[in-house]
Length: 245
View 1 (spheres, helix red, strand yellow):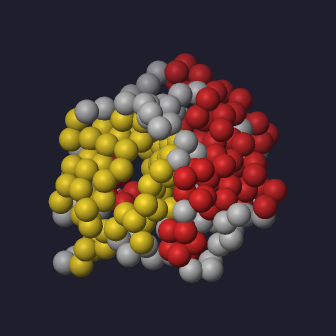
View 2: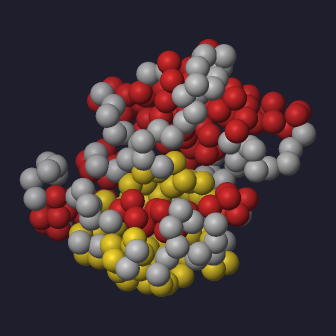
């Protein structure tokens, strides 16, 4: 299949913690306007890839090209300014602050007029109406699904070219998982490229344009969703954790 020009191009990435490599030789790309999944069982190394790409840990080798620039080893805040946002696992919001204060903090590293800040807030409230209704409420009082939407909104308010999401459906009921994917569809329609790490495999393959499968820190398969659905590699990688029809 023909894919768009890469906006994020990860080449031969090796990363880990202390002296221990968790992922080795990872190469994957996200095209402009594309949604791509990185799949694999728990402990396969998916989150480590995202942390290394987003500057939370320093890669031990390889390149990370963002809009053609090698940004491997660049700090997280600098990468945000370059157009890369990372929604980490666990809904990392400021629970005691209001919803709107959380969104304001998403722009803390950017110098904007108050008018522009307000314009961006209204954009997020248009995408996530529930956040406007709850704007003055403490973020910790939101439901799990609402907190996830706030975490995603914090990333989007920075106007990223690429947003990476780590397990956005964790801990959510099926109806809320579907709502999250509906919002991700709307985000993709706005031209934002998406790299998704997710355990809900079937729904992820319905959503994305292309997918990669990681096992034991190495890529073992890649292809269109239809190709991966036909492959035994996904079933073998999850060893009964998920059902693929």
